Image (cartoon, rainbow, N blue to C red; front, side, top):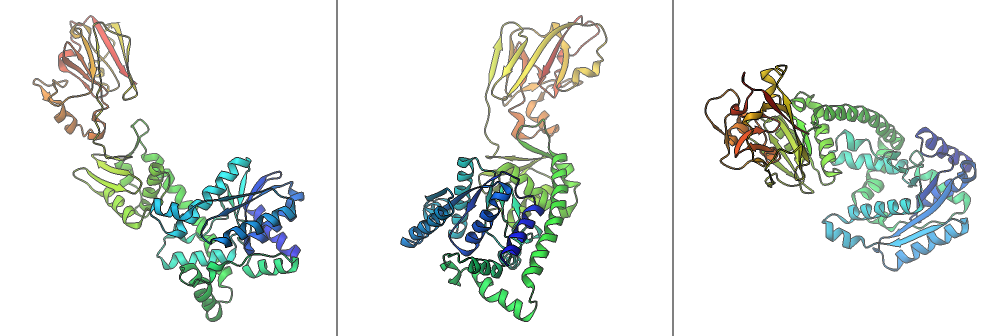
Length: 465
Protein backbone atom coordinates (compact mmCIF):
# COMPACT_ATOMS: atom_id res chain seq x y z
CA UNK A 1 0.00 0.00 0.00
CA UNK A 2 2.84 2.37 0.83
CA UNK A 3 4.57 2.04 -2.55
CA UNK A 4 1.22 2.09 -4.32
CA UNK A 5 0.23 5.48 -2.86
CA UNK A 6 3.60 7.07 -3.62
CA UNK A 7 3.41 5.80 -7.21
CA UNK A 8 -0.15 7.12 -7.50
CA UNK A 9 0.91 10.57 -6.33
CA UNK A 10 3.92 10.54 -8.66
CA UNK A 11 1.64 9.66 -11.60
CA UNK A 12 -0.63 12.61 -10.73
CA UNK A 13 2.31 14.98 -10.52
CA UNK A 14 3.65 13.83 -13.89
CA UNK A 15 0.22 13.92 -15.56
CA UNK A 16 -0.29 17.59 -14.67
CA UNK A 17 3.36 18.65 -14.95
CA UNK A 18 3.48 19.72 -11.32
CA UNK A 19 7.24 19.59 -10.77
CA UNK A 20 10.56 19.54 -12.57
CA UNK A 21 13.77 17.95 -11.45
CA UNK A 22 15.58 20.13 -8.92
CA UNK A 23 12.52 22.18 -7.94
CA UNK A 24 12.29 23.85 -4.54
CA UNK A 25 8.84 23.23 -3.02
CA UNK A 26 7.18 25.05 -0.15
CA UNK A 27 5.01 22.43 1.60
CA UNK A 28 2.05 23.83 3.48
CA UNK A 29 1.74 21.74 6.64
CA UNK A 30 -1.02 22.29 9.20
CA UNK A 31 -0.21 19.09 11.10
CA UNK A 32 -3.41 17.35 9.96
CA UNK A 33 -3.50 13.97 8.24
CA UNK A 34 -3.54 15.34 4.70
CA UNK A 35 -0.55 17.64 5.02
CA UNK A 36 1.48 15.13 7.04
CA UNK A 37 0.91 12.53 4.32
CA UNK A 38 1.87 15.05 1.63
CA UNK A 39 5.08 15.92 3.46
CA UNK A 40 6.05 12.25 3.82
CA UNK A 41 5.34 11.42 0.16
CA UNK A 42 7.34 14.39 -1.12
CA UNK A 43 10.15 13.45 1.27
CA UNK A 44 10.10 9.93 -0.20
CA UNK A 45 10.39 11.38 -3.73
CA UNK A 46 13.00 13.95 -2.73
CA UNK A 47 16.15 12.10 -3.77
CA UNK A 48 14.74 10.72 -7.03
CA UNK A 49 13.65 14.20 -8.18
CA UNK A 50 16.43 16.15 -6.45
CA UNK A 51 13.76 18.19 -4.68
CA UNK A 52 14.38 20.81 -2.03
CA UNK A 53 11.59 21.02 0.55
CA UNK A 54 10.73 23.83 2.96
CA UNK A 55 7.96 23.30 5.51
CA UNK A 56 5.62 26.29 6.06
CA UNK A 57 3.11 26.53 8.93
CA UNK A 58 0.83 29.44 9.80
CA UNK A 59 -0.61 30.09 13.25
CA UNK A 60 -3.94 31.82 12.55
CA UNK A 61 -4.26 32.91 16.21
CA UNK A 62 -7.72 31.35 16.37
CA UNK A 63 -7.30 28.47 18.83
CA UNK A 64 -5.30 29.88 21.72
CA UNK A 65 -2.76 27.53 23.28
CA UNK A 66 -3.73 24.75 20.86
CA UNK A 67 -2.40 26.84 17.95
CA UNK A 68 0.97 27.07 19.69
CA UNK A 69 1.04 23.28 20.25
CA UNK A 70 0.20 22.72 16.56
CA UNK A 71 3.16 24.88 15.52
CA UNK A 72 5.48 22.97 17.87
CA UNK A 73 4.24 19.65 16.46
CA UNK A 74 4.95 20.69 12.85
CA UNK A 75 8.36 22.10 13.77
CA UNK A 76 9.30 18.85 15.53
CA UNK A 77 8.35 16.75 12.48
CA UNK A 78 10.32 19.01 10.13
CA UNK A 79 13.31 18.73 12.44
CA UNK A 80 13.05 14.91 12.43
CA UNK A 81 13.19 14.96 8.63
CA UNK A 82 16.02 17.49 8.58
CA UNK A 83 13.96 20.06 6.67
CA UNK A 84 13.88 23.84 7.13
CA UNK A 85 10.65 25.07 8.70
CA UNK A 86 9.13 28.54 8.61
CA UNK A 87 6.42 29.30 11.19
CA UNK A 88 4.61 32.62 11.50
CA UNK A 89 1.61 34.11 13.30
CA UNK A 90 -0.97 36.29 11.55
CA UNK A 91 -4.13 37.74 13.05
CA UNK A 92 -6.99 36.38 10.93
CA UNK A 93 -9.76 37.99 13.00
CA UNK A 94 -8.21 41.42 12.56
CA UNK A 95 -7.99 40.79 8.80
CA UNK A 96 -11.62 39.64 8.79
CA UNK A 97 -12.79 42.81 10.53
CA UNK A 98 -10.72 45.09 8.33
CA UNK A 99 -11.99 43.56 5.06
CA UNK A 100 -15.54 42.67 6.08
CA UNK A 101 -15.58 38.98 5.11
CA UNK A 102 -16.37 35.62 6.67
CA UNK A 103 -13.86 34.00 9.03
CA UNK A 104 -13.27 31.11 6.61
CA UNK A 105 -12.64 33.48 3.68
CA UNK A 106 -10.30 35.62 5.78
CA UNK A 107 -8.34 32.57 6.96
CA UNK A 108 -7.95 31.38 3.39
CA UNK A 109 -6.68 34.73 2.10
CA UNK A 110 -4.25 35.17 4.99
CA UNK A 111 -2.97 31.61 4.58
CA UNK A 112 -2.33 31.93 0.84
CA UNK A 113 -0.68 35.30 1.35
CA UNK A 114 1.67 33.73 3.91
CA UNK A 115 2.55 30.84 1.60
CA UNK A 116 3.28 33.20 -1.30
CA UNK A 117 5.51 35.26 0.99
CA UNK A 118 7.46 32.12 1.93
CA UNK A 119 7.70 31.12 -1.75
CA UNK A 120 9.27 34.47 -2.66
CA UNK A 121 11.51 34.51 0.41
CA UNK A 122 12.90 31.05 -0.38
CA UNK A 123 13.01 31.62 -4.15
CA UNK A 124 11.01 28.40 -4.52
CA UNK A 125 9.17 27.24 -7.63
CA UNK A 126 5.97 25.72 -6.23
CA UNK A 127 3.67 25.58 -3.20
CA UNK A 128 2.39 22.05 -2.46
CA UNK A 129 -0.93 21.67 -0.64
CA UNK A 130 -2.66 18.57 0.71
CA UNK A 131 -6.13 18.67 -0.89
CA UNK A 132 -7.32 15.18 -1.82
CA UNK A 133 -10.11 13.45 -3.75
CA UNK A 134 -12.65 13.66 -0.90
CA UNK A 135 -12.02 17.42 -0.67
CA UNK A 136 -12.74 17.62 -4.38
CA UNK A 137 -16.06 15.77 -4.01
CA UNK A 138 -17.11 17.95 -1.06
CA UNK A 139 -16.22 21.12 -2.96
CA UNK A 140 -18.23 20.06 -6.00
CA UNK A 141 -21.32 19.25 -3.92
CA UNK A 142 -21.03 22.46 -1.90
CA UNK A 143 -20.82 24.62 -5.03
CA UNK A 144 -23.63 22.71 -6.71
CA UNK A 145 -25.89 23.36 -3.72
CA UNK A 146 -25.01 27.06 -3.87
CA UNK A 147 -25.98 27.25 -7.54
CA UNK A 148 -22.52 27.56 -9.09
CA UNK A 149 -22.01 27.68 -12.82
CA UNK A 150 -19.55 25.70 -14.89
CA UNK A 151 -16.53 27.58 -13.54
CA UNK A 152 -17.39 26.70 -9.93
CA UNK A 153 -18.19 23.09 -10.80
CA UNK A 154 -14.67 22.48 -12.10
CA UNK A 155 -13.76 22.11 -8.43
CA UNK A 156 -10.23 22.34 -7.06
CA UNK A 157 -7.63 22.62 -9.85
CA UNK A 158 -4.62 20.27 -9.65
CA UNK A 159 -2.41 23.20 -10.68
CA UNK A 160 -3.19 26.90 -10.35
CA UNK A 161 -0.44 29.37 -11.01
CA UNK A 162 2.37 28.20 -8.69
CA UNK A 163 0.20 26.03 -6.43
CA UNK A 164 0.13 22.24 -6.87
CA UNK A 165 -2.02 19.57 -5.21
CA UNK A 166 -0.28 16.20 -5.55
CA UNK A 167 -2.86 14.27 -3.45
CA UNK A 168 -5.90 15.33 -5.47
CA UNK A 169 -6.49 11.79 -6.83
CA UNK A 170 -5.94 10.09 -3.45
CA UNK A 171 -8.83 9.13 -1.15
CA UNK A 172 -8.91 10.13 2.52
CA UNK A 173 -8.99 6.47 3.54
CA UNK A 174 -5.78 5.85 1.58
CA UNK A 175 -4.10 8.74 3.39
CA UNK A 176 -5.11 7.46 6.82
CA UNK A 177 -3.92 3.95 5.97
CA UNK A 178 -0.59 5.30 4.71
CA UNK A 179 -0.02 7.21 7.94
CA UNK A 180 -0.98 4.22 10.07
CA UNK A 181 1.40 1.89 8.22
CA UNK A 182 4.27 4.35 8.66
CA UNK A 183 3.41 5.19 12.26
CA UNK A 184 3.21 8.88 11.44
CA UNK A 185 1.31 10.95 14.00
CA UNK A 186 -1.01 13.79 12.96
CA UNK A 187 -3.23 16.36 14.61
CA UNK A 188 -7.00 15.95 14.72
CA UNK A 189 -8.82 18.79 12.95
CA UNK A 190 -11.35 19.93 15.56
CA UNK A 191 -13.27 22.02 13.03
CA UNK A 192 -14.50 18.90 11.23
CA UNK A 193 -16.70 18.09 14.20
CA UNK A 194 -18.38 21.49 14.14
CA UNK A 195 -21.42 20.65 12.03
CA UNK A 196 -22.24 24.35 11.66
CA UNK A 197 -19.92 24.69 8.66
CA UNK A 198 -21.50 23.67 5.36
CA UNK A 199 -18.51 21.67 4.19
CA UNK A 200 -18.53 19.58 7.35
CA UNK A 201 -22.25 18.89 6.99
CA UNK A 202 -21.56 17.64 3.48
CA UNK A 203 -18.62 15.54 4.72
CA UNK A 204 -20.43 13.90 7.64
CA UNK A 205 -24.05 13.83 6.47
CA UNK A 206 -24.65 14.27 2.74
CA UNK A 207 -21.65 12.43 1.25
CA UNK A 208 -22.07 9.30 3.45
CA UNK A 209 -25.79 9.26 2.52
CA UNK A 210 -24.97 9.38 -1.20
CA UNK A 211 -22.39 6.61 -0.78
CA UNK A 212 -24.76 4.33 1.14
CA UNK A 213 -27.94 4.78 -0.88
CA UNK A 214 -26.99 6.00 -4.36
CA UNK A 215 -23.40 5.40 -5.48
CA UNK A 216 -20.64 3.77 -3.42
CA UNK A 217 -18.11 5.36 -5.80
CA UNK A 218 -19.59 8.86 -5.56
CA UNK A 219 -16.23 10.47 -4.68
CA UNK A 220 -14.56 8.99 -7.75
CA UNK A 221 -17.54 9.92 -9.93
CA UNK A 222 -17.53 13.54 -8.74
CA UNK A 223 -13.77 13.83 -9.25
CA UNK A 224 -14.20 12.54 -12.81
CA UNK A 225 -17.01 15.04 -13.40
CA UNK A 226 -14.83 17.90 -12.20
CA UNK A 227 -12.05 16.86 -14.56
CA UNK A 228 -14.44 16.68 -17.54
CA UNK A 229 -15.96 20.05 -16.75
CA UNK A 230 -12.51 21.57 -16.34
CA UNK A 231 -11.65 20.66 -19.92
CA UNK A 232 -14.87 22.27 -21.18
CA UNK A 233 -14.17 25.31 -19.03
CA UNK A 234 -10.70 25.77 -20.52
CA UNK A 235 -12.12 25.78 -24.06
CA UNK A 236 -14.86 28.28 -23.25
CA UNK A 237 -12.44 30.55 -21.37
CA UNK A 238 -10.18 30.55 -24.43
CA UNK A 239 -13.06 31.60 -26.67
CA UNK A 240 -14.07 34.34 -24.23
CA UNK A 241 -10.46 35.58 -24.05
CA UNK A 242 -10.34 35.77 -27.85
CA UNK A 243 -13.52 37.86 -27.86
CA UNK A 244 -12.16 40.24 -25.20
CA UNK A 245 -8.89 40.65 -27.11
CA UNK A 246 -10.79 41.43 -30.32
CA UNK A 247 -12.98 44.03 -28.60
CA UNK A 248 -10.13 45.79 -26.76
CA UNK A 249 -9.31 49.22 -28.19
CA UNK A 250 -5.52 49.38 -27.82
CA UNK A 251 -5.20 53.08 -28.63
CA UNK A 252 -7.73 54.13 -26.00
CA UNK A 253 -6.77 55.32 -22.52
CA UNK A 254 -7.46 52.63 -19.92
CA UNK A 255 -9.54 49.49 -20.43
CA UNK A 256 -11.93 50.38 -23.25
CA UNK A 257 -13.81 47.93 -25.46
CA UNK A 258 -15.68 48.15 -28.76
CA UNK A 259 -19.32 47.67 -27.83
CA UNK A 260 -20.30 46.40 -31.29
CA UNK A 261 -17.76 43.57 -31.07
CA UNK A 262 -18.97 42.62 -27.60
CA UNK A 263 -22.61 42.65 -28.70
CA UNK A 264 -21.76 40.41 -31.66
CA UNK A 265 -20.40 37.70 -29.34
CA UNK A 266 -22.45 34.61 -28.55
CA UNK A 267 -24.91 35.30 -25.70
CA UNK A 268 -23.79 32.17 -23.84
CA UNK A 269 -20.23 33.53 -23.73
CA UNK A 270 -21.08 37.00 -22.46
CA UNK A 271 -20.99 36.24 -18.71
CA UNK A 272 -17.48 34.82 -19.22
CA UNK A 273 -16.48 37.84 -21.28
CA UNK A 274 -17.75 40.12 -18.52
CA UNK A 275 -15.83 38.19 -15.84
CA UNK A 276 -12.61 38.44 -17.85
CA UNK A 277 -13.04 42.19 -18.32
CA UNK A 278 -13.70 42.62 -14.60
CA UNK A 279 -10.61 40.56 -13.78
CA UNK A 280 -8.51 42.74 -16.08
CA UNK A 281 -9.80 45.91 -14.37
CA UNK A 282 -9.93 44.71 -10.76
CA UNK A 283 -7.20 42.08 -10.62
CA UNK A 284 -9.58 39.33 -9.45
CA UNK A 285 -13.29 38.49 -9.26
CA UNK A 286 -13.67 38.39 -5.48
CA UNK A 287 -16.99 39.71 -4.19
CA UNK A 288 -18.34 39.66 -7.74
CA UNK A 289 -21.77 38.03 -7.67
CA UNK A 290 -24.32 36.92 -10.24
CA UNK A 291 -26.03 40.28 -9.75
CA UNK A 292 -22.91 42.15 -10.89
CA UNK A 293 -22.38 39.88 -13.90
CA UNK A 294 -26.04 40.23 -14.91
CA UNK A 295 -25.94 44.03 -14.56
CA UNK A 296 -22.90 44.28 -16.83
CA UNK A 297 -24.43 41.90 -19.40
CA UNK A 298 -27.51 44.14 -19.53
CA UNK A 299 -25.30 47.23 -19.72
CA UNK A 300 -23.39 45.66 -22.59
CA UNK A 301 -26.58 44.72 -24.46
CA UNK A 302 -28.27 48.09 -23.88
CA UNK A 303 -28.70 51.06 -26.16
CA UNK A 304 -29.54 54.71 -25.70
CA UNK A 305 -28.12 57.06 -23.13
CA UNK A 306 -24.92 56.43 -21.21
CA UNK A 307 -25.12 54.32 -18.07
CA UNK A 308 -22.70 53.33 -15.32
CA UNK A 309 -22.45 50.30 -13.02
CA UNK A 310 -20.37 50.34 -9.84
CA UNK A 311 -18.51 47.16 -8.90
CA UNK A 312 -16.81 46.08 -5.65
CA UNK A 313 -13.25 47.30 -5.28
CA UNK A 314 -13.90 50.83 -6.52
CA UNK A 315 -14.34 49.79 -10.17
CA UNK A 316 -16.79 51.62 -12.44
CA UNK A 317 -18.02 50.29 -15.77
CA UNK A 318 -19.53 52.84 -18.17
CA UNK A 319 -21.33 52.39 -21.48
CA UNK A 320 -20.98 55.49 -23.61
CA UNK A 321 -21.92 55.56 -27.28
CA UNK A 322 -20.05 52.68 -28.93
CA UNK A 323 -17.69 51.95 -26.04
CA UNK A 324 -17.60 50.08 -22.76
CA UNK A 325 -14.94 51.35 -20.35
CA UNK A 326 -13.63 50.31 -16.92
CA UNK A 327 -12.08 52.84 -14.55
CA UNK A 328 -11.03 53.03 -10.92
CA UNK A 329 -13.40 55.93 -10.30
CA UNK A 330 -16.38 57.54 -12.03
CA UNK A 331 -15.16 59.50 -15.03
CA UNK A 332 -16.00 62.98 -13.76
CA UNK A 333 -12.49 64.25 -13.10
CA UNK A 334 -11.15 67.02 -15.33
CA UNK A 335 -7.64 67.44 -16.64
CA UNK A 336 -6.55 71.05 -17.08
CA UNK A 337 -3.50 72.06 -19.11
CA UNK A 338 -2.46 74.97 -21.33
CA UNK A 339 0.78 75.64 -23.23
CA UNK A 340 1.48 78.95 -25.02
CA UNK A 341 4.26 79.79 -27.52
CA UNK A 342 5.28 83.02 -29.24
CA UNK A 343 7.00 81.08 -32.03
CA UNK A 344 6.27 77.69 -33.57
CA UNK A 345 7.96 74.79 -31.72
CA UNK A 346 8.86 71.45 -33.29
CA UNK A 347 6.79 69.61 -30.70
CA UNK A 348 4.64 70.13 -27.62
CA UNK A 349 4.76 67.40 -24.97
CA UNK A 350 1.47 67.20 -23.08
CA UNK A 351 2.56 65.42 -19.91
CA UNK A 352 -0.91 65.55 -18.35
CA UNK A 353 -2.37 63.24 -20.99
CA UNK A 354 0.75 61.45 -22.15
CA UNK A 355 0.62 62.74 -25.74
CA UNK A 356 2.85 64.87 -27.99
CA UNK A 357 1.93 67.16 -30.91
CA UNK A 358 4.51 67.61 -33.68
CA UNK A 359 4.69 70.61 -36.04
CA UNK A 360 6.49 70.85 -39.42
CA UNK A 361 6.43 73.56 -42.11
CA UNK A 362 6.51 72.10 -45.63
CA UNK A 363 6.13 73.46 -49.14
CA UNK A 364 2.83 72.96 -50.94
CA UNK A 365 3.72 70.82 -53.95
CA UNK A 366 0.09 70.06 -54.73
CA UNK A 367 0.54 66.40 -53.79
CA UNK A 368 -1.58 66.55 -50.62
CA UNK A 369 -5.27 65.89 -51.49
CA UNK A 370 -7.77 68.22 -49.86
CA UNK A 371 -9.44 65.42 -47.92
CA UNK A 372 -6.20 64.69 -46.04
CA UNK A 373 -6.72 67.94 -44.19
CA UNK A 374 -9.23 65.97 -42.11
CA UNK A 375 -7.26 62.77 -41.64
CA UNK A 376 -7.41 62.42 -37.85
CA UNK A 377 -4.04 62.02 -36.12
CA UNK A 378 -2.10 63.73 -38.93
CA UNK A 379 -3.37 66.86 -40.71
CA UNK A 380 -2.12 69.78 -42.82
CA UNK A 381 -3.38 73.37 -42.77
CA UNK A 382 -2.57 76.61 -44.54
CA UNK A 383 0.55 77.92 -42.82
CA UNK A 384 -0.33 81.54 -43.65
CA UNK A 385 -3.48 81.23 -41.50
CA UNK A 386 -1.47 80.00 -38.52
CA UNK A 387 -0.76 83.34 -36.85
CA UNK A 388 1.07 83.36 -33.53
CA UNK A 389 0.71 82.97 -30.64
CA UNK A 390 0.18 79.18 -30.55
CA UNK A 391 -1.86 77.71 -27.71
CA UNK A 392 -2.43 74.04 -26.96
CA UNK A 393 -4.93 73.34 -24.18
CA UNK A 394 -7.86 71.24 -23.03
CA UNK A 395 -11.29 72.21 -24.34
CA UNK A 396 -13.34 74.69 -22.34
CA UNK A 397 -17.09 75.22 -22.01
CA UNK A 398 -18.20 77.65 -24.69
CA UNK A 399 -15.45 76.74 -27.17
CA UNK A 400 -16.61 77.18 -30.77
CA UNK A 401 -15.03 76.51 -34.16
CA UNK A 402 -15.99 76.13 -37.83
CA UNK A 403 -15.87 72.41 -38.69
CA UNK A 404 -14.35 71.69 -42.11
CA UNK A 405 -16.96 72.17 -44.84
CA UNK A 406 -19.33 74.29 -42.72
CA UNK A 407 -20.08 78.02 -42.90
CA UNK A 408 -21.02 78.92 -39.34
CA UNK A 409 -19.50 78.11 -35.97
CA UNK A 410 -20.45 75.16 -33.82
CA UNK A 411 -20.05 74.53 -30.12
CA UNK A 412 -17.29 72.05 -29.45
CA UNK A 413 -19.56 70.29 -26.98
CA UNK A 414 -22.14 69.74 -29.74
CA UNK A 415 -19.39 68.55 -32.09
CA UNK A 416 -18.29 65.94 -29.54
CA UNK A 417 -21.89 64.84 -29.04
CA UNK A 418 -22.49 64.47 -32.79
CA UNK A 419 -19.24 62.52 -33.14
CA UNK A 420 -20.22 60.33 -30.16
CA UNK A 421 -17.01 61.17 -28.34
CA UNK A 422 -17.33 59.79 -24.76
CA UNK A 423 -17.36 62.42 -22.03
CA UNK A 424 -14.71 60.44 -20.21
CA UNK A 425 -12.08 61.15 -22.88
CA UNK A 426 -12.98 64.67 -24.02
CA UNK A 427 -10.54 66.31 -21.62
CA UNK A 428 -7.72 64.26 -23.13
CA UNK A 429 -8.34 65.72 -26.63
CA UNK A 430 -5.97 68.68 -27.16
CA UNK A 431 -7.25 71.86 -28.81
CA UNK A 432 -4.72 73.70 -31.02
CA UNK A 433 -5.30 77.46 -31.40
CA UNK A 434 -3.52 80.12 -33.44
CA UNK A 435 -4.10 83.71 -32.36
CA UNK A 436 -6.92 82.46 -30.08
CA UNK A 437 -8.79 80.74 -32.94
CA UNK A 438 -9.26 76.97 -32.85
CA UNK A 439 -7.33 75.47 -35.77
CA UNK A 440 -7.51 71.77 -34.91
CA UNK A 441 -9.45 69.52 -32.58
CA UNK A 442 -6.53 67.09 -32.38
CA UNK A 443 -7.29 63.66 -33.76
CA UNK A 444 -10.71 64.76 -35.05
CA UNK A 445 -11.05 67.77 -37.38
CA UNK A 446 -9.52 71.07 -38.48
CA UNK A 447 -11.27 74.42 -38.61
CA UNK A 448 -12.54 75.38 -42.09
CA UNK A 449 -10.78 78.75 -41.82
CA UNK A 450 -7.41 76.95 -41.84
CA UNK A 451 -8.02 74.66 -44.81
CA UNK A 452 -5.72 74.50 -47.84
CA UNK A 453 -6.76 76.66 -50.80
CA UNK A 454 -5.47 77.21 -54.34
CA UNK A 455 -3.48 80.16 -53.04
CA UNK A 456 -1.72 78.13 -50.33
CA UNK A 457 2.05 78.08 -50.82
CA UNK A 458 3.28 76.72 -47.48
CA UNK A 459 1.69 74.02 -45.34
CA UNK A 460 1.81 73.37 -41.62
CA UNK A 461 1.76 69.63 -40.91
CA UNK A 462 0.51 68.65 -37.44
CA UNK A 463 0.58 65.18 -35.93
CA UNK A 464 -0.49 63.82 -32.52
CA UNK A 465 1.06 60.70 -31.05
